[in-house]
Length: 154
Image 1: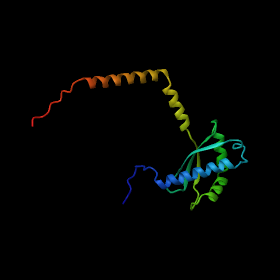
Image 2 (image 1 turned 45 degrees about the vertical axis):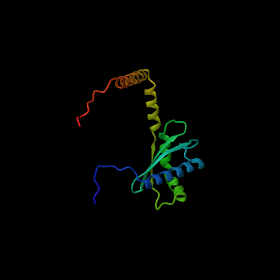
Image 3 (image 1 turned 30 degrees about the vertical axis):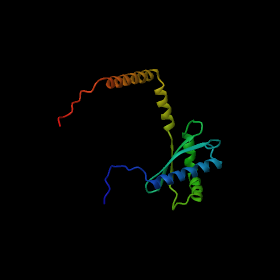
Image 4 (image 1 turned 90 degrees about the vertical axis):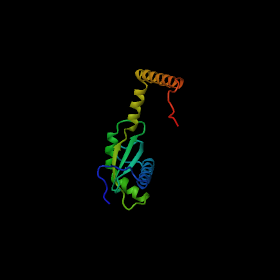
């Protein structure tokens, strides 16, 4: 039976479990190890998510430096220590092979902050307050009007 092209399926339970295992392992390594790379010295890294590919050959690792800041030097440092990280993961995770790690800056926190700033603008507050008043008035009007439905003759 052939698969339909163009339809991306959500990750299965196994992929989610492996992604979480890899995330926990990387977080443990980042917490315990000190790296000689100058870009990673005295930098605390949070691993927010790991998304392995369906064939488990690659894994996209979403990171953010604790306390914010520029992620570019951190990503470059992580690329340089990738062989060490894969070797450490191989010692801690029981997989047939360790996926190639692709480090990406996680921008969901920045996006959430941008949305929060938008929602706190006075124009949005005014629109939200006005929208709630009209919705409740419409609901009150609909509840007070008698129904003009007629029953069919039996």
